[in-house]
Image 1 (cartoon, rainbow, N blue to C red):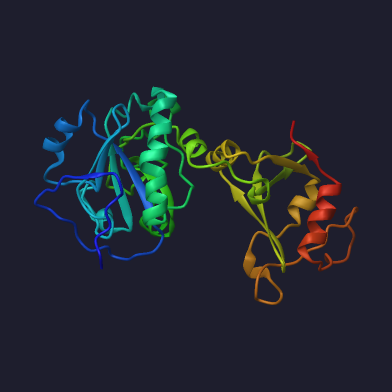
Image 2: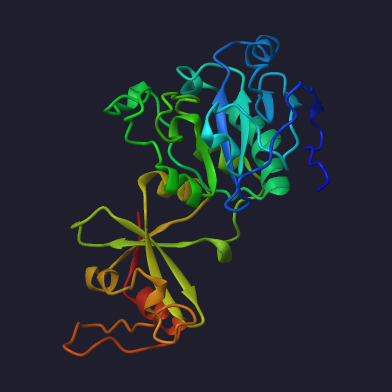
Length: 297
């Protein structure tokens, strides 16, 4: 396989030239912080376990050490051979929350977008935290509640931090990176037709929000985290408040499709009745929902 080098990134090679990935599905990007103030200092420190690359948003200098088609070493454990690109950001985890908008714009343009284009990392992310978020047990422990399990890591695709890697890892870098701001700077805003439909109950009984997925065969809902909601809003998505009965009766599992081909069709009667929901084309269902909803103010 041809080596994959990022356009515009200078190459800086170490003795370690990469290793095979254990698998090549669910591409993900892992952000680190160098815990120092310069690229030069970081190069000396991590020479025994280099990442794919390093980036300094201040002068936009970017170096790649290992081609993207091979795994790198910065996690220093069994995570390294996951389908995972590892990038070191010059700076400190305790300070990243306060980086200026210039940082997020530069990271979006020089790191996130090129890796979307060249490694296929989707534009989604886990929430990035630091000590100000009051996480317990603390972030810098293997018991941190934001760490993924091994299976969760294998199944995840998107952006995450060293702080999310499974135990026994105890690192908490890169801190509270403002990933929502970064995504807002990546490329053009989503077109209106591409915006996901987000629904929630309009009676205040639950703060839960769901992305409503529509296909020609029906609709289903997926509960989203607060972090994902923030990211979607940063990209321009809006929340629509819906009758609680309508929310509760949208199936949450695509496997409920009566045809087995797509997703379960459902009807949205104005008043709940004793009979099972009807089966309707998705566009009719959405039209019914839209007639009985109001935008979030």
